[in-house]
Length: 321
Image (tube, rainbow, N blue to C red):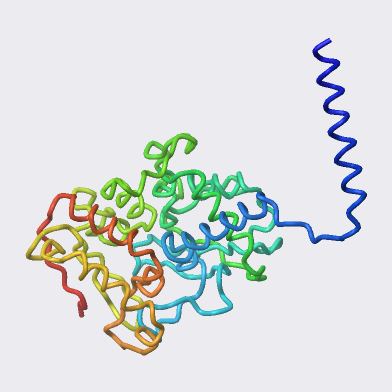
């Protein structure tokens, strides 16, 4: 009997909705759905991470080193082709792939899961292993929701037909792939709360791949015993520049820096006029004009994390001969 009353009530409500709807002759535009709003937020988050934090476009585009910090050349976003050779510490040469939605030369036919596997485990759609200059070991520690937001944004890029040359390494790719350092799944990864400045700063520092450049390099690879101590030299051809020591060592690192000084290092380049010039041999390989778009609170969190790590004394020559 109770079920009968429930069904009857549902029927009455349904009839009322139909009746009052038919009485309204006005045609209204459909309101934006919650799903649409959510997707827009996801893409917005993805754009922020892609352009200003993870630096996906900084590698997978052409950079203009006739300007300070080599900003991305308009129209090349995601098209790939950037060369990384022996001067960058690569045993041979690899090229950044085309990550635009072009179906023929980009990732237009890739599924989200295929892109996610490539980004977090270094395995491409065809099962090929990526050279670890692609920082999939970092992204393997990132929250899945952030990674999916990047994928959502990349899918909005303009498709560019750009076939990238194959890599040429001096040893089998298996020699550079270390799955033992990768988590088998990213499902449990969580973005720390922003209220935990140090942990959240560590998360953002990992996402921004600061440690991959700010570390001493040896003939056998990065010196993992001295993380963030700087000293790797980028030889772009027109200039050479050594990465800074960003540990809290007071004499050779950023131990004496205030939060304000650290922030100003980035925020200065939020205005194009401050990087729209040719510095010649005193250029920077660090895409600071893109990092400048990071939120103040995120930069402050990174500073808090860097000040929490072990100080390492390592004097770096900024512009080696």
